[in-house]
Image (tube, rainbow, N blue to C red; front, side, top):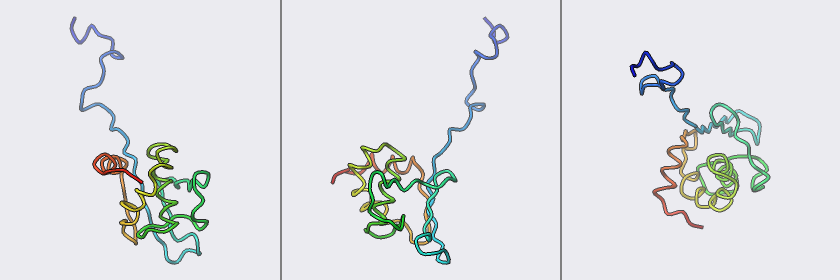
Length: 127
């Protein structure tokens, strides 16, 4: 059977024609001119990341990063819940806060989901 005998919808895509797999990207930005409590914004693929107060209510003023406080804990659980699931986030957000969120650059940062997955895979995840 030649390529011409196969219906186009069953031929599949070549490696060059295949659509690019979407890359999930988390981006944190600090605006010192914003009102108190709104200085730090975190977006995932352009949309605001949910604070996930249903999982942890550590920081009523929202997200923070670059140190090991309550705002970074809120960010850690929100990222892990988005990237993985609620159970993983609840079990490992303290570790993620210590090892990743506390080290993020104060002015702004970008993390891809694949970077998070790689870090989780290579690190000893424990709390």
